Image 1: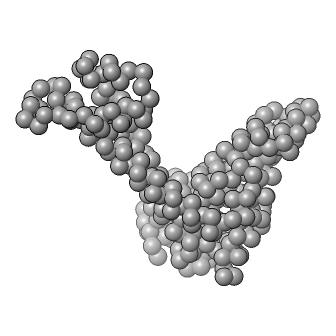
Image 2: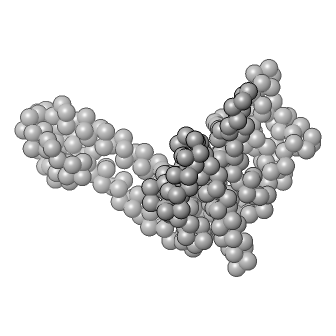
Image 3: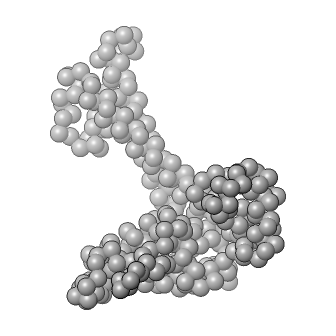
Length: 286
């Protein structure tokens, strides 16, 4: 049995079942090691508490996942390079700093990439700063080109894999790619729209007390899928007439904005589930 690995998305595939991480209380009592985790996973499978099917890794959804992974790391590296460039500009000599004050980030990157330091005079802080700014700017440009290539590839693959999902209002390439990655290549993993909502962290959890009757969002599930649905809900609440009418009606009923967003996310999860299942079934049919 393969050992697990640390992290909030810790899972362990046991044969035909997927086992979630051990209970936190049990982990605190028994400790953590690879043998302990393997034994806990085996006990969960034998007891029948672990019934989820593991994701397949042999289809187009897996291709989308790996491309998204590289794209995410490139975006993170680009952000770090931009922050470094701006920090260098803050402490740069006045002759380099002042012409770039008030310029946008793109303009600063373009200007810094055109700098020409004198290699034989790098002991001079001005020339050394020019070399550093040029290196950081060209790194940003290379990462930007890498991100654009990844976006083009993902746009082609996602449009091929999930045309119905992308037709859902406010679901774009990035959101559809994330929801496909969460669902996996095998649609039989999704036993129903309620389980998909639970997987995305949009299932309503009772949070009532006394005469107060309310629900809250499930704080587990795939946080990236939850974020994709949340951003789609934000767009819908601004631009979708049907959602705007719903928000207005529920506001008159006395619901707060977070409660209304919880309801809209749940409805969106149901709509996305049916579109995803149709797309995945069509892929397997072909």
